[in-house]
Length: 106
Length: 406
Image 1 (cartoon, rainbow over the protein chains, first blue to last red):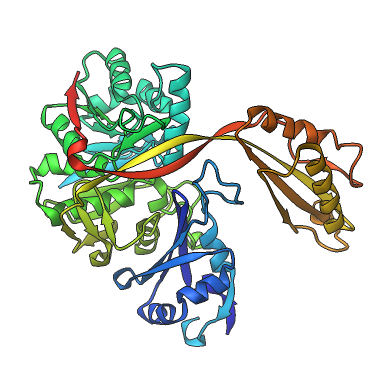
Image 2: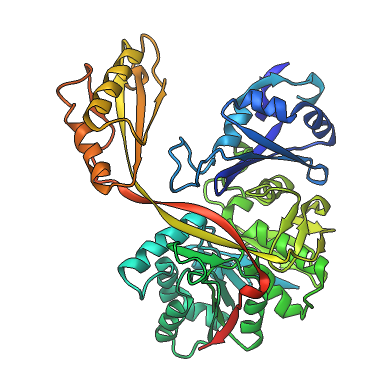
């Protein structure tokens, strides 16, 4: 079913110098299993076309994935001309993207 | 068990949080984080104006209100509010309450090593905080230490941990990471905020055990929530690889185990390993001057209106250092003026302060000579200097941290 990712996925994003990170997590093992296979680096870049180089880390113990978006913020928060220079709302943007979610998880 | 609370996640956080945490229930230690990368730059500019400044002034106000209360209750205070001038802040606190035993941590300032930087501070660890507490300090102020050290230091002092108690240090580091952003652990900025009462989240508390495991909780009767979801959200904040590097220990985030508890969330299982040989340094340099304005484009021909104003501004001051974004917040045939309007943002970054100031002048001179419906969202400004943040790494033996008691 086509639904916003945030229907079953939480997120928190922020800045580290010129990089941004988005941590995303799920609330059941089944949802994590789906997210882990669904939200690849390529998929993330498709959902957030502003992302450049991305590294993905898995944290199955937290039912979570962490994405580092390299260089998104230029030279860091004080100098960035980007809308949302500290990447605070990147995660909420991601959650609002509509994707195909298995009905059993909704 | 040691009960450690947090009352600040950044310079500017809820001023009343110190009092709330002291009056809301029992604590052994109250911590507060006041420093972000950007804050070091703000403090650096304060220090340029007055060399006696360079610390977080709001913390001093909190202590004017609450230091006596903390001492009466036997709650120790550990904060990084010293910023670029921990000694200066410690002396102010000593004047405020001559009976208080105040310690400070110094040695993070590496400006001599990085003379081109406005601020250069190594991320120090927990052991100097622990030493201050072991020497009887009731208040410890530091400069740049890792945020988690504010929690690890008091736990290490309380339990007498050794420097190679990796798992214990890692466990306390996780507690510190959860606490360091204040209410972000207890329902603030939380994706599923509609499921809880997020109106006024209480500040978080970690009850740390001797083995480094902990219970994350908050005072009874405070708002927000501490659940495995709110704690997970904060664990994921501003991290990179699962190997979380710090000056005292490498913490393996992929070993953390969370369990719901009637008073919050139990955290256990965390594994630690030795820290890297290098220490991270936060460098801020002055990058130049920045100014910005936002043109409101209403109704028809939004793209053409944007092209006109762009052309005009480029003709007036040149296009070097200008960044434009057009946010199409407008809606066709809208029933409110705001919904009919798009926002055209333009930012200038330049080495020349006169050009940053001239930017506003040039933008406002267009007011009667540009697209129909011309207006901007804010009055013109002179522009501000901006910093460039960089991380550097130095060998551990190049940093000599010191614990000092007044």
